[in-house]
Image (cartoon, rainbow, N blue to C red; front, top):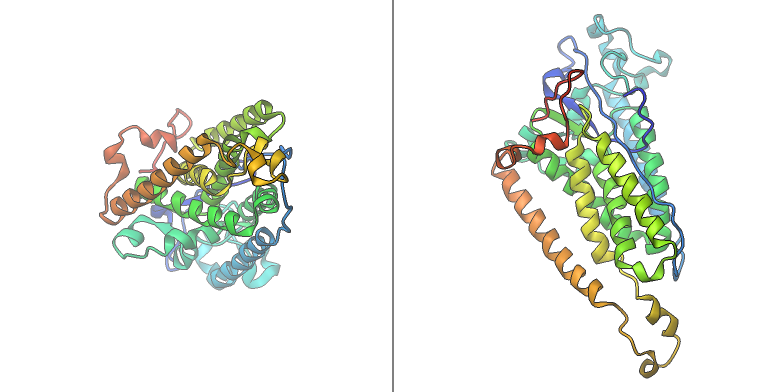
Length: 342
């Protein structure tokens, strides 16, 4: 993990390693993954929006992290950490971090994250705390985790918001985060999970579908597509390392990919060139048949996916029972590590 330079991450925590602030906290494991971004800016864009939603999300996440650390209050429970070391950066007082053996990302304890809304199967399914599907998106396991996610959000989100506006980007961000949380909870029962990776991978998926559905208006489209696909594959590949919640990545990516076909459609290039002419002289349709077909299919798949996922989740079903090999999507065991993500 120390060599991981990827930007965006999703952090999860093994339930067996939780610190209850009443017992000696054992070592915890954190997970980071990647966050790609797409830099092709060539398009026949219409209006450039001012990006304010993405900066507001960054401010909200930073503020929430400060609240987390105030609630965590490491010095108050420092006597419990004798086996793990002292609080890190003690001069920060209540904002100081858990011992590095417990949290190498410079952040709070697992019990604090769980109390404030981390994603956990038992609480979502048995305690009916569905709000955790949303709250976990706004929690971060440490300073490193927070910085990585926010850098990713800035790189990905500002470009999209400038081109498509805050409303569509906001919908994609939130629904992708929820989609990632649903898939994560269906397949991972032994960990708690926090982070905005589902939402950020959703923005990435939307960028891919936006490129595909608006193919006629882009220059250097083949190079842009190849670059974007390579970035996607690299980042998803990082997710097969242990303790990385790749199901949140996949769920968020698929949700954002479908939403891109629905929300990010632009008029085809030939129509844009004629849109200043009288209606009778424009000739071609504003949108292509391809765009209409994928809009309908994406809407159907999105509604069906959310409906099936939520029904399975609240019936308490384990996704691994329906897919014996799917656990390899989140962790591939080797001689160097084992996987405990089911």
